[in-house]
Image (cartoon, rainbow, N blue to C red; front, side, top):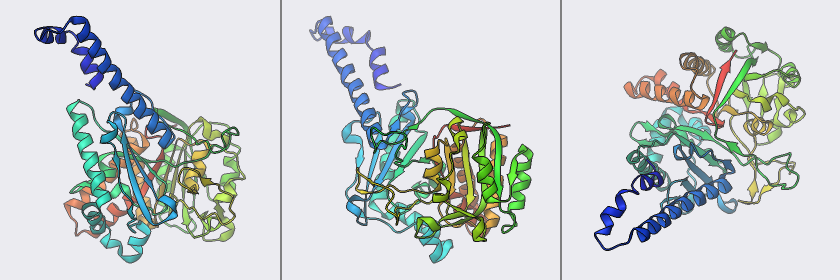
Length: 432
């Protein structure tokens, strides 16, 4: 029960209790109404502050289920600051950290050094880094407070405006209790709204509402270079998809689609380099690759009807701030370029959600993870896409904990946590 409702339910008991202390009924009711107004005002102020900070529209029915984690790197240096917010907390109960040097624990850096050390390094980060410990403490206390009021914390929306690529989903709240397996974690970015010509810095809002993405699957599968993609083809064929093996034909035809598309599925190589124009999806053959710049040729109007994009490709969820052409404006809030990539492109076009990866993923494990995803969907089609990913992380974490010396379990655990979700945490697939 929330504080406002609790006070309203207790109205009838207050006069009898306090009259004995010499208070008049009118004064008691007046004082109580003032207290209610203060709580309601606080709640509305918090919602307004959250909306302005994160560019998110909050549906009142779900706001107690949602917490927010914002990460910034002030004034283009190597420090980070953390803000954590929840709509029911007082201002002093929100979390704001002081700047400290950003940890260099991106999957890319850890795995290039030694992939097998990933779980240990992430546990060390969770236990030894002051920023990480503050996040853990804040979230655990928030969960306790909400449970006392018979509420649950279900969703964490992460707005990481940096390019340090910290794998927040792998943060351990408690030993063997990982953030991305304990809560439905979703990412969001500041994305300027191309249709808002009055406020040129106006951002696209994230609406946290239940949304069914209905229709067919349209897929691009690079079976030429990646043998395990044949396994993914077998999985998809259960749903009667439209399949392409040429990336250019795939995007050309996708641009002409007028019907509803539930899922755009891409299983291919993903190339990530320092220059945005060199970060691409496709084949090893350079004539069969497509960049973010190339995608801006297309309209993809069908996305406005509601679709999910699943990019089962290396590096597909990574973002960059190094626009060498200086096309992208600086975010006036933080004085840095807006991070962009394939994920932000599809969200800008209207996709409800986008799945991508934060590093290179072994072909064999990529096929296993997509198999697990569709298997979980078939078992529980009522779950949101973000919840399905949470369940996959939890299962992979449980199997790893059961036998940590098993390399198969360890690699599946690491690779599964590389898959992140951007967008509406309540978007669901309804495959036809």
